[in-house]
Image (cartoon, rainbow, N blue to C red; front, side, top):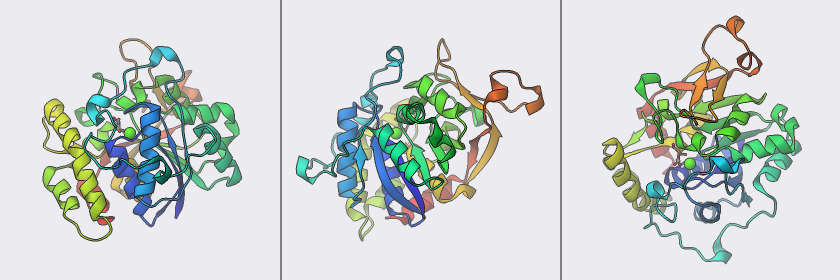
Length: 322
Ligand code: BDR
Ligand code: CA
């Protein structure tokens, strides 16, 4: 199995993604690092520790960034989407401190550097929150870029199929929460796969699907119930803003890519992030011929952007782990 460090801001869809990662035999969860985003760093770190305990994952959990690299980029946490507790407000994960997965003493970016350096070529980073911890890890030790197997991020919106941003007309939440960090991560010399709204908006978990997860027997039953409770608020939110019946499986889609890349169609080209002004947080991929590029595009590595997904097959994959 592929060894994975999961960087996350749980977060309802983050909680779904972590379950898929924990349960699928193609992947081995090695550590979890938390980041601000859907809620404060205190809340997301506690949720990460509670979820690891609930899912039976004895891995280190390290706390990461409390805000973006530059204070001017700070925005309110997304508690209107994920609830004050980050998990929809009615899920029962109120574990006592001693029942939470233990907190690693290192900051998230140091844990990432230590693990990558200890096992060069082996670790895949999957980041489904703001990219701040990954950017800090690159600043701390730029040498890790050559030693990471792959970086898979959930973030961005490239306007294919008419899919625009979910915070502004051009910006997706994880990117606009720290545009400078995202730009550094995408411009670094490591292989990045970008799983953005262009594909996650085609991964809709409808009410009947969520009901189905809840109704399953076996080991996944308690988790199905928990996720059903957690998604009540999230579903109301998407109903009011997007008019859909159901929720988008944003973060689980990044895990699905790690398990089965054949679910997705990729497009290669350098990706940069707009860091100021009206279009702040917009992700742009160059698809023009390499020979026609000028600075800074000619200096950026070609990254892979997901432009299409087999949504039904992805949903079937997720369902299998319950
Ligand atoms: C992303 O933003 C967060 O709110 C979700 O957890 C997901 O990672 C979707 O834009
Ligand atoms: Ca997330």
